[in-house]
Image (tube, rainbow, N blue to C red; front, side, top):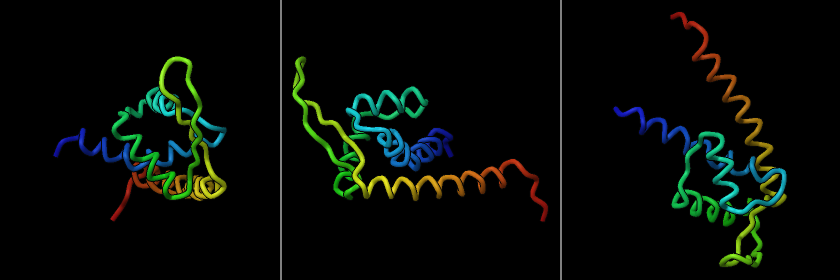
Length: 112
């Protein structure tokens, strides 16, 4: 079993949550989202993020708007819908519970 495959699966598992969290403070352009993820050491390529953004939009969690660009094609800016904000709130709670459970299992000695 290759560790890189497991690491990639772990990153994919939290990517949706991370994207919604990035957008909680306001709209962002895709390259800004990618840069934030990169800065956090969550390396994601455009081929991964565009389908995910489309899926989140189709699920009613994101809106987008087009803005003309002076240096190229129009840019699509994403932000959370009200449904997306509620969904993120639930994910925050779930993440907290999951984090505590994983920390409990991985940091404490388990006796059988």
